[in-house]
Image 1 (cartoon, rainbow, N blue to C red):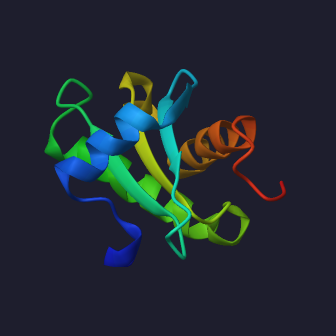
Image 2: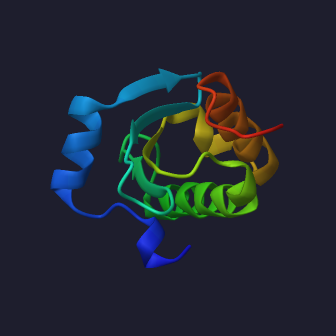
Image 3: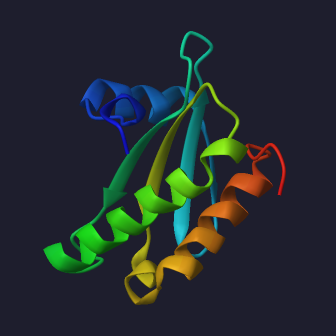
Length: 114
C-alpha cells in the first residue's frame, strides 16, 4: 500500500475518532470520515497488544492492507478509515479477514458494488 494511502499521524487518527462515524462486527471496528479535499481513501490500522505478539499483529495488518488493495476499485474514494482489529482476528486467515472487512464496508454503504 502506497504511503499516500496511509494514516500515520496521531492528529489524523484523533480527527477520525472525534468527527467520524463507526461500525463494528465481531472481528473489526471501522471508523470512517468523509474527506472531500482528498483524491483517494486513506487507511489507518490499529492492533492492540492484547490480540497477540508482534508476529501476530503484523500478520493481521498485512492481511488488512492486502484486503484493501484487492477492494481498491470498490471503495468509495474520499474517506479516511481506521480499522481496529479485535481479538478473534488472531485466528483468521486472509480470506476470512477480507470477508469481514467487506462486510463492515458493505454495511456502512462504503462499497460501490459487491
